[in-house]
Amino acid sequence: MSTAKTLLQLAGADLNPAKLADATLVLIDIQNEYLEGPIAVDGAQAAVAAAAHLLKAARAAGTPIFHVAHQGKVGSLFDRIAPRGQLIDAVAPLAAETVVEKTLPNSFASTDLHALLSATGRKQLLLAGFMTHMCVSSTARAALDLGYRVTLVADACATRDLPDGQGGVVPAATLHKVALVELSDRFAVIAQTAAEID
Image (cartoon, rainbow, N blue to C red; front, side):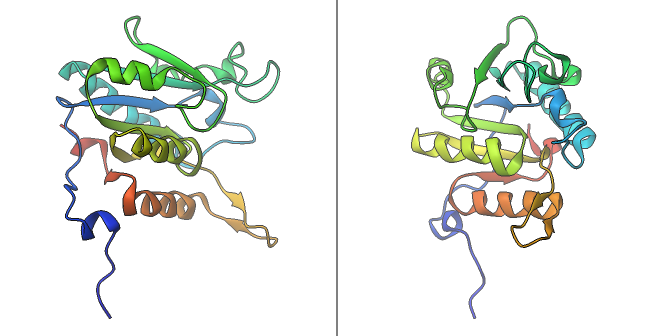
């Protein structure tokens, strides 16, 4: 039996992570909602620390940076007026950094993110955030359709346990791994750690 390969490998694609000098950083939904409560993600603090490391490096390199925040209804999940909906302090935007508000998993849907990214003149994206299987995945998939080359930073992403529809639970670590593998087939280069990005 032949060795399993991704479509990107079979196509001979460049599998090196994007470099800060050539890319734009997009941090997706790194909000307090994911630290505790009904949708707290597994390994949130470690993922936030990795995202903060990536953000610091991007700022030092002069990389364009965009923060995406999910906007829910007032009094519900992702209430942007309440503390739960705020971006986590460790990755809070500077005044010069743009925050894009979204209401759907795909960060491009009904937002101006594509126009903002296009204005940078850069076609490589570095993505990180929450949740790996949901908004990060949706954004990475849509980015391919829009002509971007995506690098996903694995340790700066995380997700949560989900019911498996059969009375059991799929652990967050498994969902995270599977989401990364799915994306690596065609949609994104996977950098395992923020430390790999230079």
